[in-house]
Length: 408
Image 1 (tube, one colour):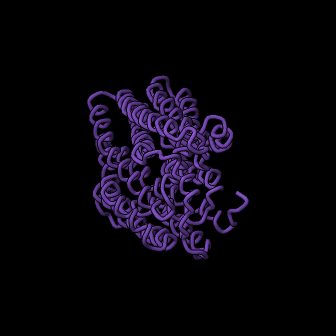
Image 2 (image 1 turned 60 degrees about the vertical axis):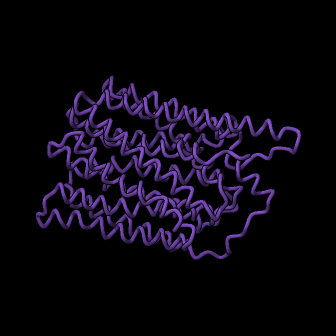
């Protein structure tokens, strides 16, 4: 990432901290519900309350990210999130009813997150040169996913030993720190330039359609969100382990993502982003069936392997999606993908919650695995068919330029 300035690299810790804060809030709230004898359906409704506003608003907020200053939007999201996050510990201290307070604060944070996702993607596309998108996306996606997974480690241990109020107060501070880092990136120094026609052809990935790429990207949101809802129910509700065990399991998942970051560039150079994205999602989804079957040690091993595969697939998908449209429309593209993923999350969460409520988490994991495999297979078929058709039509007409977003 030689062409990426040191200030632009500040987006990486900012993304990690924002992801950490968002998921400490959500997973900490889920743990509160489980400890209050909540069922999987109660936890599922919490995740649905978070997903609904993002699913509805993400496409519109994606357009806003393409119209307004993306850096200011990111900072605004963090500042409002910090204020909203403080409402939970303050409300708990004042004796406000726990369950409505948990739902309300997370609903507000979800609305802010709907703007953060496309704004952050658009800011990256704006500030990072096209040739450096692959390595930067690798580091950025790992920052997001590591923050998501390590939030359970930090949140679970802190909730067990310190209680909810210090945990959620710390969470508000993470948003404030993220806003400070993004402010330090500085204002945009150059206007968005229209790409030359030759570069446009390169960036558009030989005509790969946006819809199946959005399906793959959205499926990643489904897997992570529903997995994070099932895991505390499995460990705390069924296996009767403490929140610290949940934290350790998610820390193992974070290690898997770090390993994914270390090998991604080599894997992508050998297999190509398209194969890495579809194959990684398919194998990772199959592993979901096995995770709740053999106890905590086996769960840790399978989570490590699953996170390793998922991390590479997620990075590859992000690169493919980011380079599928021009710089001026990246926010809209990610808004659509994020909206689809969260809408699908609502449906899958309801199904998994109902199945788990009538049986146990083994069947919830199996439902998630089945839906994920079908979605990834459908997207892979669409992308493969379209890619082969385009290559056949262009064969002999002009040389095919490899995209920096992925080798086909």
